[in-house]
Amino acid sequence: MGPAEELINSIVNSSEIPSGNRRREIQRELRSHIEDFVEAAREAGVHQDQIEKLVLANFGDPDQIAQGFAWVYRHERRRVRALAFTLSTVLLAGCLLAVVLAMQTGLAMGFGAPIVKVLASRHTVMEALDILASVAVYLGLISLESLFESHRFQKAALLLTAIVGILMLSCAAMGWHISFLLYGLVNGVFCRTLQLFVTGKIARAGIVIVCFPLAGLVLNLLRSPVSHVAFAATCASWLVMGAGYQLMTHLAARVDRALLNGLQRTQEDY
Image (cartoon, rainbow, N blue to C red; front, side, top):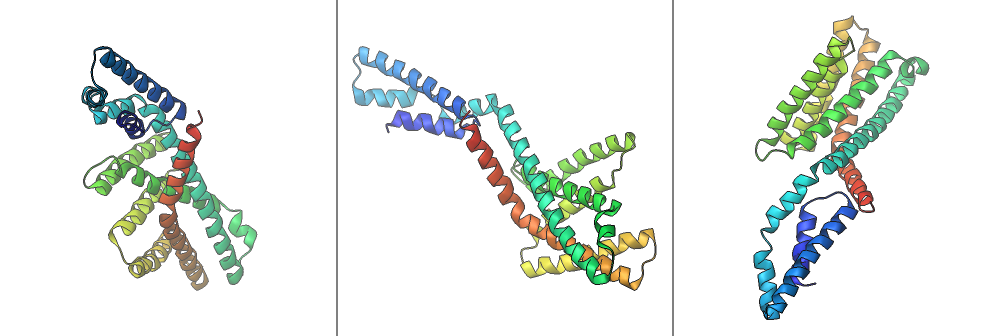
């Protein structure tokens, strides 16, 4: 592979164009442009060694060319990114909900509570919405952090808080239930904070063991007094939730990256 071909491949790869067809078209156009230049140079009597140097010298700044293509195809790239984000959120939230409900069903059987009452209830629906919102916020933070050069988490958290705040106001204006959005924002930011700023696994586990059962107990006490059995069941249930979210933080970025890479490979055929 000659220097000119390496230059073309470098530009196309750096441009992050999702569609393989479009990448190949651009490669052909760039190659044709170079071939025309080379032919004109040969007709002018320029030596082959000098032609290659002239091609590289007159081609332009590769980084600027790649940035230009990246700007042109930014909407396609955003569509692929949005689809990967949606699939990641639904997949992770579905798997997490299944694991949490399975564990909570086991706890319900241990405490003698009817399984149907645990699964077929308004609480389960709200739990599903809470998990979906939490996963979406967590993945949203990871995506937004890539937009900033410094203080990435802080800036991404502020931006996402503003977005969720606007969404909550819009939903409240239409009379929709919005508590799951607030829970998702707090929980997603909490999980990301724990992942970024608490490095020890034992320390993370300790924080989860304390914070999640305590949060569940406080929320239940705000509604009504609880018995000793309800107290134990609440703490156990929220501890399961905390463990599930910690598992999510370990898998989320990998699942999201794998889906994005899969979608990009699929785009290569179109």
